[in-house]
Amino acid sequence: MKWVTSDLLQYKTAKEYVDTLLIPLIPFQLSNDKVYEKDAFQREVLSLFVREVEKGLTGRILLTPNYNYIASKEPFVDEVDRLNAWIEHCHTQPFQYIFPITFDSSWKKHEKNINGTLLWFPGLDSGDLESKEMQSVIKGQVKQIVELIRTYW
Image 1 (cartoon, rainbow, N blue to C red):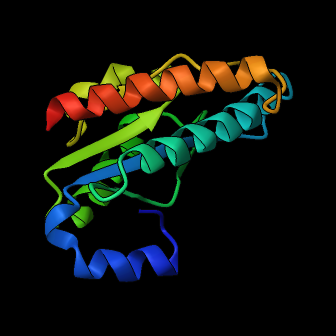
Image 2: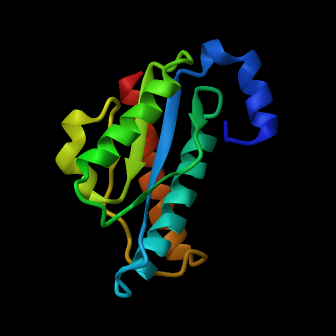
């Protein structure tokens, strides 16, 4: 289920079946001209990934709005605390499994402090999202993500 009105209305009546939460972690920064295009592309790819994962696990998963953060912010521990506050808020609902998902390896350094299971994947730097090759890569990785989440159930 996505964070849209029709899906949330359905979620209200099916809470006992929706036990998994997926939180896309999206970096944002404008201070480095060399990086923000790559970051924007990775946001687009991650958005495609999470939508496809949500489709593959419909009925068991709720996709939250994007969790945006300033990529260059130091110390990163503050972001971990902020994410954990999000996660704690989400625990007011009956979610057994919470998966923040990202391409940003900075989160891996703090994984043990996150109150959920971090899903980190190396991101793509560029490409044509409409190309058959890119669609094939995305579908293959989505399949792996879906299988990984299912191992936690």
